[in-house]
Amino acid sequence: MAGEITGPAPDEWRFPNQATPVGSSAYYSLRFAPRELRDDLAVLSAWRHQVRAIPDRVSDPGLARIKLQWWREELERTFAGTPHHPLSRVLGPVLEQHGLPQAPFTDIADQVEAEILCRQPGTEADLDAACERDLGAFFELIAHCHGLSDADVLRAARRLGGFCARVYLIRDSGVLARRGRALFPSEQLGALGLSHVALGRREYRDRLPELLAPAADRAKAKLTASDPNRGLPVCIRVRVCILASLLEELAGAGFAVTDQRIGLTPLRKLWLAWRENRRTP
Image (cartoon, rainbow, N blue to C red):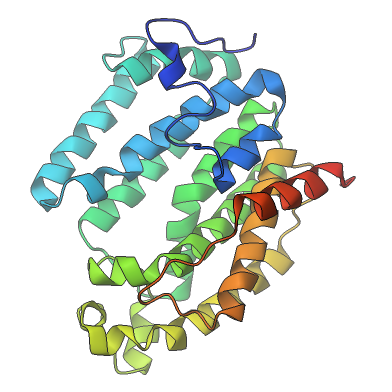
């Protein structure tokens, strides 16, 4: 099998794993990927999950940066063929099998560091760039695993990943605001007489719908301007389809995410994924 995983306890990283749990959007996305790629894509998902989870698992910014730096150095070792971590040892063959570039991995780590340091985007363009450094970079890696190398296709994958990241930020904005980590352009907050610090207080978090409605409109406009069918893998199209439906669900609920998490049921995600998989691009 392409990129076959070897080594001790491989089931921890195979599909489905902790980064692609059954019922999640990530699960249904990979479930409709080619069978021979699912484990490889699950390994990539696990790597991103390990790095993305650092701010959640380590509250002290200094310690979080140290942990992130270790993963940065481990990435260098993995590309050099001398990994230490069990996950890195199964990641190495995936890198080699698909000839994956290092830059998208670095982009993901850079965005995590920006969030650890509470670097807030100044403008909408800055927020777009932040989203594309996260899921956008990951979608680019998925495209590479499918043998895609055309620059326009890779850029389309990045843009669609950025769209998905935007939807997740909207969904999770209540939780993130309580943790002081909500990402909103400073210029948008200033225009409403708000600040990132103020969003940490309940009386200001209740104004989240004011921020999220225009954020959703911008996300929809970005999606409309993109082309999900530009030769992109079905697993990317499935993820975009599910997240577009989630955005509609959030809008239908009036973006009432201050104290609750709004999501789609696994059955609905399965239906959306199946329908997108059946559709001819």
